[in-house]
Amino acid sequence: MFKKILVPIDGSETSWRALDQAIHLAEKFDGELNIVNVIQPYNNAALLAVPLDQATITQGNTELEKIGDKVLSMAKEKMVGFKGKVDFALEVGHPSERIIALAKKNGSDSIVIGSRGLSGIAEFFLGSVSSKVSQYATIPVLIVK
Image 1 (cartoon, one colour):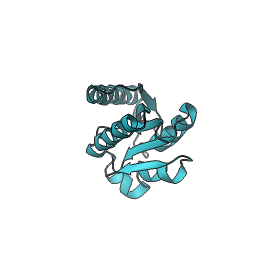
Image 2 (cartoon, rainbow, N blue to C red; image 1 turned 45 degrees about the horizontal axis):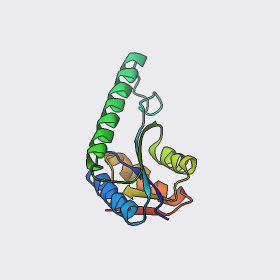
Image 3 (cartoon, rainbow, N blue to C red; image 1 turned 90 degrees about the vertical axis):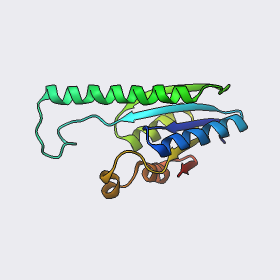
């Protein structure tokens, strides 16, 4: 365990703490890191009957991708001095589903994730990403507060 660690980040304080913990574990167990930011694109269904034209949706998705790229750039800055293998990925889709699918696809043996992200009130009603990942993942999940 901790040889191939998936670390979802969203720019929240707890995701940065999760990344710090994952770095420590990877260094201790000679592991590699797969750092991912998952953006959930706008679409008509997700906006709950608030109709927007396609141009507005496309512009919003482009902005989300820019933010995702910025979060990954910040993560790269935090990796200075890390000697192990590290990969970065920007994924599009439902966060918990993409995290679990990516862990399977990459052969991850663990997931290190922050306890609360940036989803705000939606996580109160729908359940947090970390909760869903820990419930449905088939590998160990370390949730960092």
